[in-house]
Structure formats: C-alpha cells, structure tokens
Length: 250
Image (cartoon, rainbow, N blue to C red; front, top):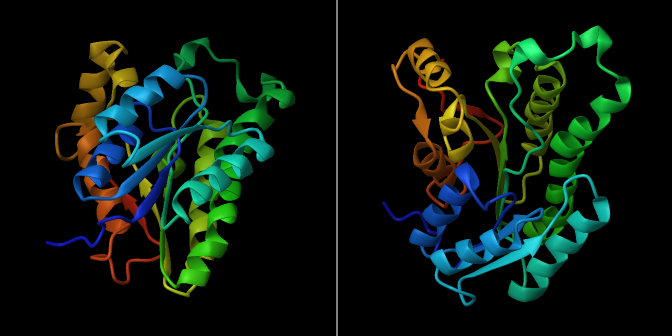
C-alpha cells in the first residue's frame, strides 16, 4: 500500500526514544522528512537524526512542553526549514512512573503539583497543533495524531491528574475533527508498551500487565508507530476524531 508520505513534512514531539523514536523511523521509511523535538537530550536527538538519514531528511529542535514560547519557536523553526508542516504527532508527555504505594492520596496531593502535568500534557499539545494548523488549512491537507493513554478510560492508582489530562485530549480531537479543509485529527491511545522506560520496571509488573490484555502481550513501540503512520497518511481518507487503542484489546 502506498501511504503517500514521500517528502511529507512531519513534526513529532518527544521523539528521542520510545514510541516517538519508533514513529520517526516508520515515517522516514516511508520517505517523509521528519522533525523531532527534545527537551534536554540534544546528543540523543542528534543520534536520531543520523538514524533517520541525516540533516537532509531530518532535523531536531529543542522544545519544552510547559513553555509556550518554546513550542511556538519549535514549530516556526520547522516551518522555516521546510516551508511547512503537513503532519503533527503530539507524542511528548510529562510523566514519571512511580509505585502507587509511594504516592500520597489524591486529597493530600498539593494543588501546585497538578498544574505542570495538566499544562504539559494538555496545553502543550494544544499549542503545538495551534501553531501548525493554519498552514495545513491553507494547503488543504494535514494530519494530526495526539498520543493519549488507556488510563484515560480505566484509570490506575495514583493517575488522577495524568488520566484527566489524557482524557482532555479526546475532547480536543473531537473538536479538531471539525477543522475540515483536508485536515484529519485522531487520538492513539496505547496501554503498557515495551519501551526503554517500561523495560526498566520490575519484570513481574510487565508480566502482570501483559496477562491483563486480551491479546496476552504488551504492544511494542513499533506496533504503535505503524498505527500512527497510517492515520497520518494519504491512505487514511476519512478516519477522523477517533480514539484508536493499541493495548491488545484492553
């Protein structure tokens, strides 16, 4: 199947590792030009650029989700380098896995600890899309994928803020679905995915998560990447405003 991605200009936030990096590789394999953002790991980002074919096919730009000016500058940098952005994959997130037994009860969580997660995981994605959307409209074609999580559906201990932020993206995508002008927006919602960070967790937790999925296994980053690339391609003619889960049926 020809996905029609040759020389499409793709911006993937938070793509130095995990699902973001796998997605960058998948787009590059389809002939797309790929821009990735990173927060602090500049050297790692440059390694990804090399992996994707070097500076003629990929660029890396610093971007901090909680900093609106940084987001605007990152999108403008990519547009200036390539003349526009055709695809946005809002993958970056603010989340650190913590043993739920070590977390305070929600009613004891200081309110000022809510806002960074909410701003990064909701406003950060919204601003990224906002700065790229006008160009998509003007060109009459664009694809947007927002990365959520199945915790938005069924929660998990200690995930109140993170789950709320991810659920907000579902509503955002439903609103974006009315953009028209050739722009399609969707959510991809992974469950536990075998990325570098998850593999550093207790193997017993990984095995338990795998057995809770109807498929009997966890997704790999490449599994998720293939779904994202299809939704962002010419082959996707009318899937719009949908939440596509990649959690093995969970």
